[in-house]
Structure formats: C-alpha cells, structure tokens
Length: 78
Image (cartoon, rainbow, N blue to C red; front, side, top):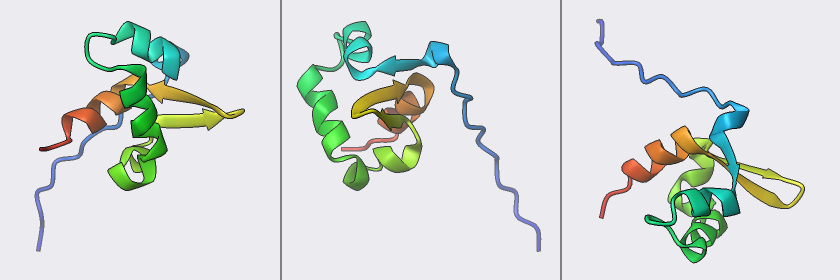
C-alpha cells in the first residue's frame, strides 16, 4: 500500500536568518512585543516552539531562526 505524502522541506538555518531575541523583536516590532516573545520562549515546551527547532539557547541567550519561527507562528490556530 502506497501513501502519497507531500514532503515539507525545513528551511536551512544560516547566520543571516538567526537573530537574537531582541533584534528579532526590533525587526518585527509591528507584530511582536518583547513581552510576547519572552512568553513564547518561557512556554516553548508547551506551545511547540521548542519542537519546531526555531529557537537556539546559547550562553543563556535566546536566538530565533526566522524561517522556522515563521512556520511555527503561521501554524498557530485560535
């Protein structure tokens, strides 16, 4: 039995697409406050953000991989 499943490619992370939490917020200040992004980070295990691969935690600082974060955010439903 064959299944026809579409493969969704994961965008590659490059240094150009990785931003600190603060720089991401500045770039997208029309969409997110720093408080909202901080809440997303604190709850990343529950909201699926950790599983999405969109967050890097290095030296106690959060970084966001823009294409993966965009995919995760677009998948959120009310």
